[in-house]
Image: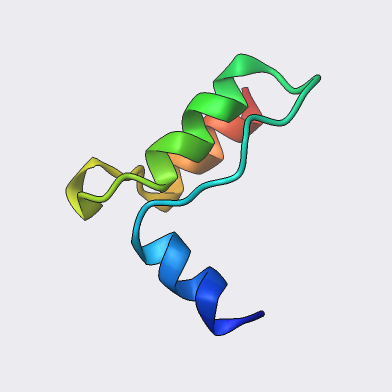
Length: 52
C-alpha cells in the first residue's frame, strides 16, 4: 500500500458502494468508517448484524 493512499484514507477517502450486496452491509461498512469512534459498531453488534 502506498503512502498517498494512507493519506487519502485519513482525509476521508472511501471506496464506492459495492454492487449486489445487501444495503445492511453497506450501512455497516459506512458505520465502521465513521470518523467518531464512538459511532462505530462494537464487535458484538457486528456479529449480530452478520448472523441475521
